[in-house]
Length: 102
Image 1 (cartoon, rainbow, N blue to C red):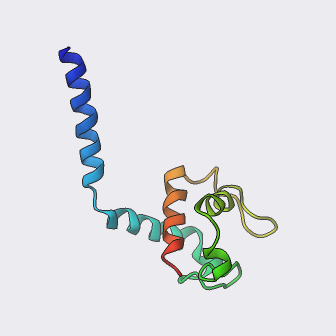
Image 2 (image 1 turned 135 degrees about the horizontal axis):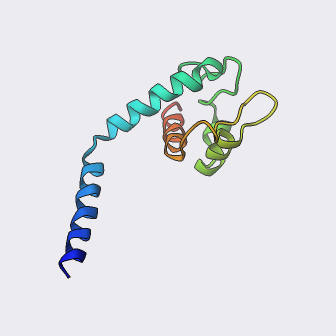
């Protein structure tokens, strides 16, 4: 019984640490990732440079799953796939960051 209690305590403590991280830390990570991977084509503010305008209604009306799929799988001929370069949580962060560009 004590082992179960210790396991539960460990899981709860780990979750507490993760949840204690400020959301702004995640947002800063996503913003930095956007700058390094996306801004060269989509612009620093998401307004079309060589790629789609991420601030436009057409991009913003896409579901999170649709944006995730485009980032993961790419969209030929210009949008490269990042599913093999980024972790799923990084892609999720980029989707959340794109939502802030409207």
